[in-house]
Amino acid sequence: RGLRVLTDFEMELQMAHTNKTLLGEIETVFLATSNEYSFLSSSVVKEIAKFGGSVDHLVPKHVALDIYKCYASRNQLASNQKAPDAALSTNQLSIQQPSETTPEPQE
Image 1: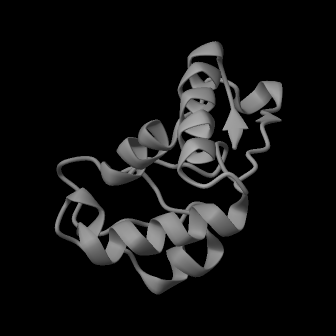
Image 2: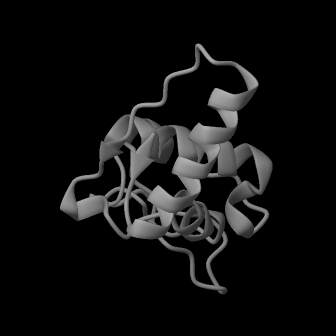
């Protein structure tokens, strides 16, 4: 389990004890998160992507691509417009302004 901050440890330790009580063979391993990701949560990344923002600088490229594909098909990038395949394949999407109708890939 990845640990970012102390509150993560408290919650994960409680979960580890519960799992151990349910099934004694379960072992939990805790990994400290690198400093650059210590205050980043999946909720923040999903919220940014939901509204068409770039998550390229927050997650690895292959993860960002999957996130863009997910929101392109699920929410059509929060503006009811599908992202062009070129933007998805290059892992770059622009943030749409309300007056724009089609996202353009960033160079």
